[in-house]
Figure 1: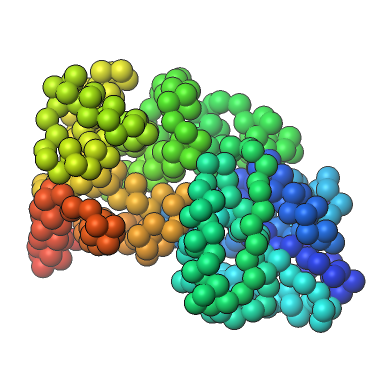
Figure 2: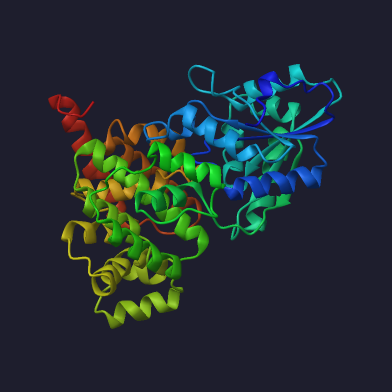
Length: 419
């Protein structure tokens, strides 16, 4: 098994790359990125650091830290430049990157250069990390974009961070491996193969320990068929987002006692119309007899909820009215939202592949404590974002905020709010 960093003498290393993450599970995409960065930086070591208690996934089921550490160690074993650290695995409570990097600074020679590898999507949250300025002074960041990520957006984010916090941030091209841990968990749950997505030893570990096999209340063949259809219909980025929404929604359904099958199917299909071109959205609305209002006609993306519900009904045979409403209103919200509708609405904002959206870190924790307050906070954030972009906030969103805010306050006053 790969040697643990805590038993490794790093004093002889001049260039060290650190790669933190949940690694639930680690997959071939992680390894390909690590090797590409190692080669590009001429790093002496790449050290994987599985998180102990990941901050941004509070409330969402994450595999035990030992499972994640051992899978990472198994994956790193064949590469002589790869090592695994228990730095965060053994740390009680939440882990902060600044503390981890400080530990490595102490173990390395004074002139050693430390690089921290992160995903481009996580970079947007960097200014909110603990002691971000100090962190950027201790190491250089290497931002790796997944396939389909906007390079222009990435460079704008980097320019903004450098202007406010300084630091060294470079961009590296990631190998074109459109795979995510979320996708692997879904495939494992549905009985689909994960071979060639993860190292063989990791696959055997997952099977041996029965990881990711919770029952979501959906027949396994149905998941597989739906998954295959979505892979054909959606871009890689949208597909990965959809899997994250489905997984988060399933956990929220379990938390609040909602119908898990309807919730899961609504989550999987919520963005089925998202990537249809604007003009085509309006044409399909007319063809299906849907009647978008004037705001939706000016901002056609707002139609993707109602259009998605119709496509889910016509092409995927979804008949559950509550699930169809959840798809229809997942962007705008509406007054009197059902529990299922709230779950899909908030899951869209907090799924783990969208760490930079609308203060999602705090919303995730709130969603599992008080879903009404979480929906209200998400609506407020979304409306502020829409206004800042110079777009019109849809009246349904305003009415939804009044409705869910009133419900939350009344529940708190009556002592019936869920703990």
